[in-house]
Length: 402
Image (cartoon, rainbow, N blue to C red; front, side):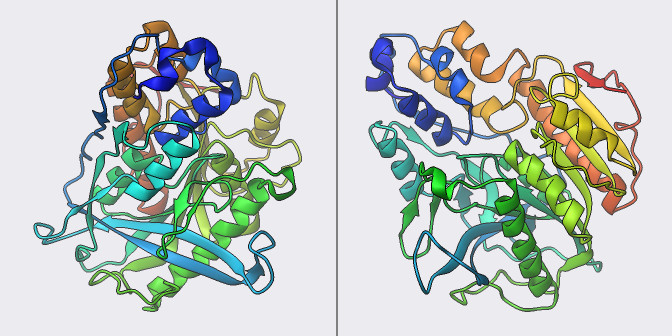
């Protein structure tokens, strides 16, 4: 990644290292900060990050939305202000040639991330995604199923773009959201906000879930032909009315995985949920009768009582899988972005493994693309493939936990 912070490992602070993690879309526990350091003497060469292309048959479009929840006052912003969120909608697109590709995150947000973490602002360039900005929606006659995504702590809505654009390339509308004050986010007026360190304003899974329930209201607005953007900006051609509000799924990573469970317990609009290594809280004791899948790594039923307790309350279809060699951040963009940064800064293999485990990045991408798609296909489209039926020779790393 960068130069100065990595040339003197003994002087690195946890804040700098966490900032480096956030700059590539991770919410890495502080316990990983020490071994995440790069080796001294790394070359100060900026790196252009890249993401793998999705495998689906359709081009992908994307558009950002500025959402304001008038029913929720914002105590941080002060009197007269309400909860603001930035979201992105991803979808199958057509006629994409004249629409530019969207960056993984805005240049302003990336500069804010890097400078707040005491890095030079130009040490890395964000990758381009597969999403063409505001391209027309591809319609095939039937309304499209929807999946909503919730990120982890101290992260942002782009941190699982590999999964998001994969789903969109197979015909899903995917809505991602920044959980303001627990995310690095940029608003249309140029404001860049970072996660707050003030415990008084710390956001828990319940706060994330409240954000998502409001986003679901906005999804219903889109389905009804209304534009939920607070600034009234134009939407891509064909987006309003393209969504099927009767077929909504949700997935989330870490705290977002916990939020996925909370939303499903409280809101029947979400018909299927996927947690990517979410640390389920022991107080989440309500029964859930809709399909739920867990992809675990660090927060396993064997190691985390909250996850084990939550599993016992799943009364509908349920599945728990785990990829050999995966760590907490393996089911996300980290798995492909961190190795690129490691090469640029001369990070040792040992330190790289502390970040991404021993699961090979190329295999991690295939797992990220195959299993979430198969889950939502089965439960939102009633398409029964075989990848969820049990161990597969195509994915020898994946264990099905009883």
